[in-house]
Amino acid sequence: MTNLETVHDVPVLMCAPEGDTFADTRDVLDLAGNASYQGAQWVVIPVERLDDTFFDLSTRVAGEFLQKFVNFRVGVVVLGDISRHAATSSALRDFVRECNRGRQTWFLGSVEELGERLRWQAASAGR
Image (cartoon, rainbow, N blue to C red):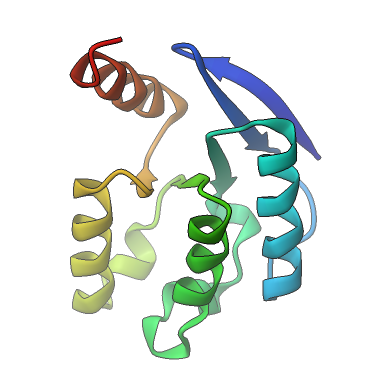
């Protein structure tokens, strides 16, 4: 289930924590397309909805998933605690750090953190 919300004047498609795991690129392609169709600028995917293979960068699942959102020009937020995955992978920690510096993909711990990011982004864009 998804819900289109507005956070600091930004349309955000929020995925519920409950539901099927996004395990293959077709699932994510449908989600990215749906977000674009609804006019969302961001999609929030709770950590619970991502298969563990997403966090193992050697599988390339994360790259394939995130590319779908890039193609639709929709940002993506992975929301929740990824510490158990990051604890065992310096590559994942580096990837998260780099993503969080950008404007396309963020790994955030809470919806409040998302609100702060979007507020900052709006302010830096001069809105």
